[in-house]
Length: 141
Image (cartoon, rainbow, N blue to C red; front, top):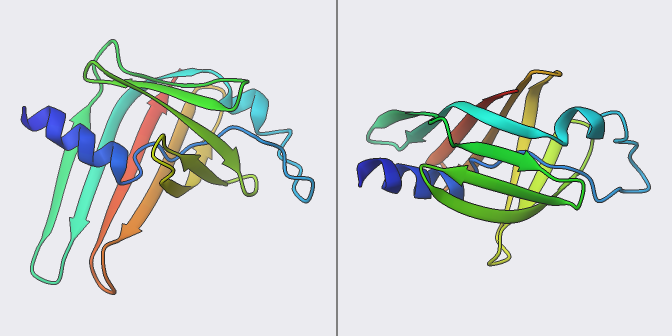
């Protein structure tokens, strides 16, 4: 149950910090699409919660069946710990992405590494002026 709760929080707080492209005419993201539009296995997801009182970090290590699949249809299909989800996504620029969840909530993230076999991205969600949750996903192909 603890793993499921962690994953639920991680997904809602921006774990899925990657995106494909609903092409923006002002930004040329065409070089990113061939790299990201694949199915990625989950190495790990790190969730760091910072409050004025305490810092905590939790790490989820991917299971064999876990994946992030960035489709060419503008949807991100995920499975984490047996729970499937679908969201839409797009790039703001070559390393800033937006994920739109089914309820309309949006998460924005930064891709720090994107190669043929590695994808690392981080999102930070402020809960007030000093407290935040930062999620980093480490994916591989």
